[in-house]
Amino acid sequence: MEDELELVKGCRAGNNTARKGIYTLYSKRLLAVCYRYTGDIDVAHDLLHDGFIKIYKSISKFDYRGEGSLELWMSRVMANLSLDYLQQRKKMQEVIVREEELPDVVELPEKELYGDISDEQLMLFVTELPAGYRTVFNLYVFEEKTHKEIAAMLHINEHSSTSQLHRAKCMLAKRIKEYIRNEEK
Amino acid sequence: MKKNEDEITELFRSRLEKYEIPLQEDMWEKLESELSKPSPKRIFSIFFIAAAAVFLLLLACSAASWLYTSQEKAPSLLSKTSVPVTEKHHTIANTEKEIVGELPVEKCNEPELLQSVNIPIDSTVNKESVDSVSLEKQSNNQPEKSVLVADIKQDVPENVKKIKSYCADKEWAVGLNASIEAGKMFASVGDNQQPINIHYQSPVTLGISICSKLSDKISIESGLNYTLLRSELKEMDGSLISKQKFHFLGIPLKVNYALIDRQKYDLYLSAGGMMEECVSPKDEYYSNNNGNDHDYSMNRIQFSLTSSIGLQYNATEHMALFAEPGVAYYFDDKALASTIRKERPLNFNLRCGVRLMY
Image 1: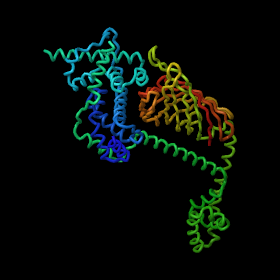
Image 2: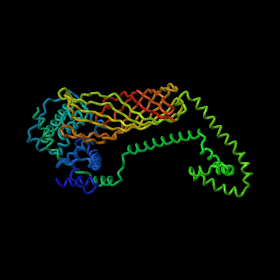
Image 3: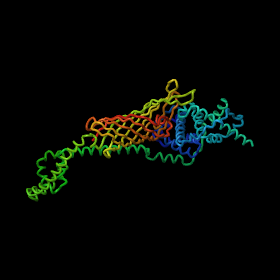
Image 4: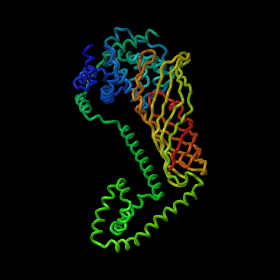
């Protein structure tokens, strides 16, 4: 996208119109990224603010590699800020592994049943996950990291990354089923 | 099970990847106003500038005190002229005699000084009888001179007495040092199927230090340290995934206690702490072989406690070599990126360097 590259160049030059341009384009989506990681909308707003400051400051280091690369880079900045936030507040350690609660199989109901659930509701399910599960889930599903990479990033055992992802999925499936059951009533 | 897991992943990814949340009002305005502010440098950069300034000031003070003391000891032109200047009118007539003799030499060295002295000389010379004034003042001035000479004479034997230790009468020391710590350790992350190794290399530190003597036994030391931490993430088969480099600037503060104080050797204990800031990468974007970038944000401060025993060899009166084996404890800086500080908070180190004393 030509325009996007122009915006990036504008931002590098410190042009406020260009800055507002990328802000208008991506801020809502990036706010969702922060919210998805932190599970707290107020914190997400703060991080979005800090994230944009960081983006404008370091955009000279960003290497534009075609369409999508800007959004990817920006969402990574937001994700990393969110991870820092979680790590600093030791939110990640919130999860206590309880082996007995682990279901073996994650089952979703029929597609027709969950297809009607709104995006907003799905987002709520993610944000309601315990921080540790949510972090691994976010990194695996949205950043498309491997367990090995997640383990290295979070400095956790790779097995713990695998199991936390599994637990996250179990909880999400459970929430979806509960939701459908409540809707049917 | 696999299929269902993928279904969940797919569901959330497809529905939430481009999900948007409407913003609170005036978010952009707040951002814009912050951007238009003259970019506030981060507090700790200011802190480091301040620390560097203090360090330079200390250095300047110590250098000045050294210059001052060395000049006091050597009877110089400066000390002679300083007497008449402070004595003003009383010695003016006397100085006139001296200055006349030394005029060509002094003119090039101290033109300002001379001017201030010259003006009153002319007036006094014109008004009064030079002979009587100079005679009177000379007698006044003579004891002062002899005091000055006595001072110098007293200093010399004192120095000789103190020579049992070169450092005993030195109040300041400036040092250059390098230190290396135990490193090269492996940490395995991951399960048995896909573990990765983190290979930490020995941290290397370079520093300048300044030391001030508080008493015979106790001295206080500070300075500026640069530390490099390196690590490599490797597959089990040894292939490199990525490399990490972290640069730290730190300010140590230590108290040294002298155990043995000899002419050629000193043995001392040190204890203190250090505050370090990761100056780079603040955010490092680098690629691994998957083409993915990792951002290791290290905007953090690392605190540590240190303790060491030092052996100093006094090579000359003003120069000494020292070696300090020690131990340091690094507090968790809560940074995301894994460093040897996190893996091995308690680490041994060996610091060696040169000290200049005066």
